[in-house]
Image (tube, rainbow over all chains, first blue to last red):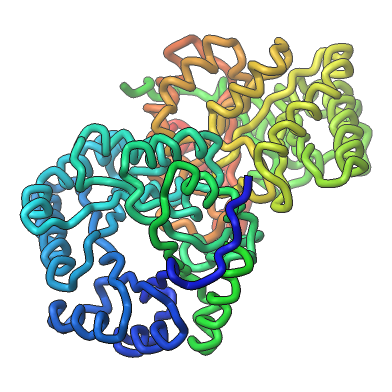
Amino acid sequence: MNADPLTDFSRLCVHTITTKGWDLEEAAEHYAKAGVSGITVWRQWLEGRDPLKAGESIRAAGLKIVSLCRGGFYPAVEEKSRLDAIQDNKRAIEDAAALGAPLVVLVCGAVPEQSLTESRKQITDGIAATLPLAESLGIKLAIEPLHPMYADDRSAINSLASANDVCDKLNHPLVGIAYDVYHLWWDPDLEEQTQRTVESNRLFAYHVCDWMTPTTDLLNDRGLMGEGCIDLRGIRAMVEKNGFSGMIEVEIFSNRWWEKPTPNFLDSILQAYLQHT
Amino acid sequence: MNADPLTDFSRLCVHTITTKGWDLEEAAEHYAKAGVSGITVWRQWLEGRDPLKAGESIRAAGLKIVSLCRGGFYPAVEEKSRLDAIQDNKRAIEDAAALGAPLVVLVCGAVPEQSLTESRKQITDGIAATLPLAESLGIKLAIEPLHPMYADDRSAINSLASANDVCDKLNHPLVGIAYDVYHLWWDPDLEEQTQRTVESNRLFAYHVCDWMTPTTDLLNDRGLMGEGCIDLRGIRAMVEKNGFSGMIEVEIFSNRWWEKPTPNFLDSILQAYLQHT
């Protein structure tokens, strides 16, 4: 089953890292002019800024702030580092509140020196430790399961099932999932786990891009939608079948695209969004 | 739980591609001299040779032939290509029989243009089409689940569960699994699925290497055992707990190691086998 083509940009959100040639003002201005509806702000774009003012200026440009990206990286061999990570996640939650972003995306972390089982436990504990603050500020936390090729040092949560398991354990309405097709498309259990995610009201964010053949770099060779093999409309049908109608966020790390002029990349994103997403 | 250290080379097998600087005679001679017990022959090493004579010369050097690597690549959009793949797999089975290898390892294949569900069906059908020949020659077929980062064009079977599901469908004593730690280490269901594999008498082959942090190439940046983050003794304990005591096969694709003199690489393999595997 395929989803119907998207016919306007009312659900289109772009991540600032996608157009990394632009600072926050440039991104907001260009997105708004192009008709993009939402923006997900990466924390580097807030460095040295007042998040409150940054939020005001983004909203003044007419954009919806979708998420702050990213918290996480809870696991560490040393307790001191784990406590530092919790502090950093609290700052991310405070920054999201000041910015006016309803959600922090979590790249949960992993360390090659310890087992994935231990890392998963530390992730669960780390999120739990920030929940009182998230509650008091009304900020949602979205666990992003990462592709298994990042299990060594980026995330010990490598499937939708695993992310759902952590959500079940924490069992809190503010804890959900950031669903990125790049990380999940290969999973034989995708349909079943997508249903579990949507039915549990925890599909908090939906990220798109594409998988290139060949992929020449583990981090920065993502494709623009339509350039690769991900069944984007099939997966969108899966998430929408049970009622998801949230923003569709374009998150592309690509040395190839980043070499081109940023305005051309944004034009291509708009086209690919309508044609392939 | 960790497995006991290995104290001799009676279970050590090396893949000819690991020491790709050597042709078949050189590999057999060096392996035997070093005390390596087994060899897995990649098909390129048989090109232009009589597999019967190749097998005789390997056995004369004192080595056990463990597997022929590799068949597979069943899926294709065009039926003609799928029939060609079946013919090629039949040749692999005949070559294995002539060589005296009891087993063909299957890298099952995938094509970016079609769904993984369709590819999995074509894989199952493709294996089924070669089973009568495999039966008549007594050759085992081992499905190797590949890491999800190869789901675009190398294999639609990307987890141990998925490989077990195909085995269940085919339900034949000659169809089993080649278990490679590189592809499987990240899986949260590894323990449960390993037990399923061993209990079903289908753990036909066990491959080792390591996962590097960072990994700089999707294909050819595997680590020597001990260089990376895979819990090699923990995983070996899992497979041995239920009685697996077969060969331990070193299969390393590494541009970094291939740049060094091959004899030095083999020395390092022997050391790493005892210290870390």
